[in-house]
Image (cartoon, rainbow, N blue to C red; front, side, top):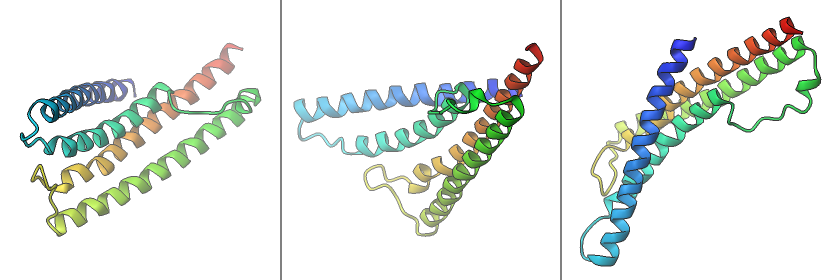
Length: 164
């Protein structure tokens, strides 16, 4: 479990940091080119930034789950016995995995449609499937993170009851 967490952390950190750097660079170049060289075509940067933003968002969701940086309400659950808290964690894991699974499945259908109809991004002239692929692949990574995070939380609850 710890090894999977480490591997996911490294992949996500790489994707998010490199992606954010590229987004900042291209947005900056887009603004500069609009002001200093108005006739220079730089229209592809907007599509590229959206494409990268989608990938970063999916990996950011995964990262947030494993770091417990997502929004969570523990006002009620922290006052419950350990067994009830574990049930809540399992229920939360199930709901999160199902929701992300729906997003991933819908994303997979979207990718299939983009491939079937050979849709391309107008300025970048690349397949739209590259952009849409972020949903199913990111969804798989998010589901793994939901499971890793949930099982770690269950271990923490069990550890807390053993210490008490």
